[in-house]
Length: 246
Image 1 (spheres, rainbow, N blue to C red):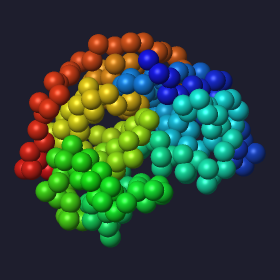
Image 2 (cartoon, rainbow, N blue to C red; image 1 turned 180 degrees about the vertical axis):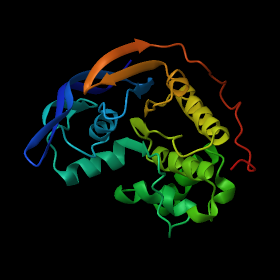
Image 3 (cartoon, helix red, strand yellow; image 1 turned 90 degrees about the vertical axis):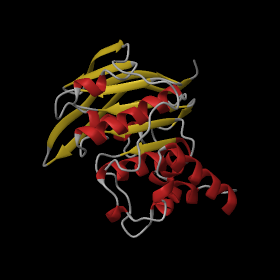
Image 4 (cartoon, one colour; image 1 turned 45 degrees about the vertical axis):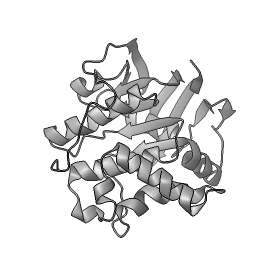
């Protein structure tokens, strides 16, 4: 399989009031195309810090990060933003939708940073991913008019619209009830079966077991890395969110 991400001895140190906190300690990791990875561990173990570095939202204090063979460890903020808009999709626990943009406009946002796309191409790509997450019928609605489950499905569509090399999800079901959490997890199951590369931070053991590979952090170190037979999988096209789901 093609290598998407290679981390070598990644460390992250935060300095606050002359106190040094080592959030990550020499993490080495290879992520292959098509893998579905869960990242778990106790609060404060470094999960979100690692995801921020993978998503180019932050830079490591030391170590090397290669994305599709390009060293992205020491890029400027603007350079990181450009690569992130082209190659990385991020799904946040709090959805992070823009309240005064409708569903279509929220999903379209990552494409506005890319050159060479016609208005028709953008429209087609947005409609395609909205159909994939069963939100086409809500494309003219605003976030406040949607339930939490619907907002998260829109957030997943936004993460998919730029055909990313990897989808990063930070506790994507953390703000959802059990019914809507299951709908979102089934969506990730489907994306994985369709060939997407996914790394999902979760504190929920049942959610972690749906991934094909499970990683565990403890005190900023990678302490477990093992293959997993997903606890639940679905055949392509077999799940339905239904418009009545909240």
